[in-house]
Image (tube, rainbow, N blue to C red):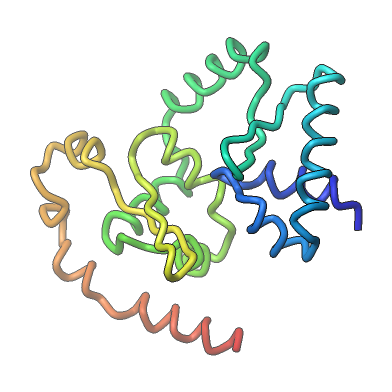
Amino acid sequence: MNLKASLESLLFVAAKPLKVKDLAELTKAPAEKIEAALAELSKECQSEARGVVLVKQGSSYQMVSAPDQALLIKEFIKDETMGELTRPSVEALTIIAYRGPIAKTDLDRIRGVNCALILRNLLLHGLIEAKEDKKKGETYYTVTLDFIRFLGIADITQLPDYERLSKDDTLDRILAGSEAETV
């Protein structure tokens, strides 16, 4: 295994900074080797004028776009966030609205696909927010106040058929069934 490549891949797909200890657990490499590989990766990103750089804050690391790409990225994000939502994004947002807080893994199982990009897009639109449950090691998503305000309602419970749909146990049975299949 190429440790530096593994770290770069993990940091590229991570939606948040990762700590050295987390990277060590994921790669099964000692923290000292992780730190050495990260230092090497950081130098490479800076010396090769790449589109991403490695930033460090305390013991956490994250891959971010290079500062000289800021204008391009800003324009791209503006287009992404101002554009209309796709049908899959609307489906995911509906599930989050009626069933939130919901874990990404549950959303993935309900929709049958990896929802990482959809969640990223909804976060960029400011329609959902993420909260990490450190005990479970999972991130849960809920709709934002901006989403509620955008719909012109005062409370999420004012969504059509909210009481019935938020309590419907069909999704719970689907999730329980898919958990049983993976065990």
